Length: 166
Ligand SMILES: [Fe+2]
Image (cartoon, rainbow, N blue to C red; front, side, top):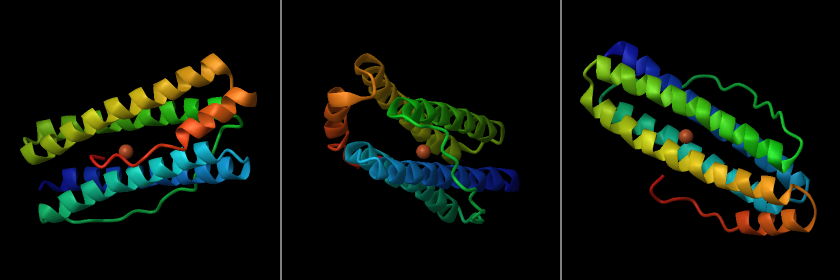
């Protein structure tokens, strides 16, 4: 595997772990606020991002490429309310989608077909991810993010399970 691509994949491993870290921090904040369903959703998201990072990690090992784990930055949370939290999640996932597209393009340019295939999986995954976040955002905008309706949404989010395909 070309060295430049190996670096790019290693950098994406960092980005996925940093995503995981942000979601874990968000989970702790929601837990402290007594919003256990929101906390659970974020913790499940943490787990899913870890799965993404490991998918890239395993891919490098399978290709006999070098894994170079990088330092993770401290997660900074810029939200106060559940609505703001999910606006942050959508923005973050759109940023990740942009990175995945970039990596896919690099794989195309380098004619690295296995990496193109893997990136295709990530592209589909990002479509699903952004869609599910938008659905929660729609609910939050519709019912508002306080009072009894927030409690109902909190119960709903408590039911999230880790997608076995993720
Ligand atoms: Fe991810």
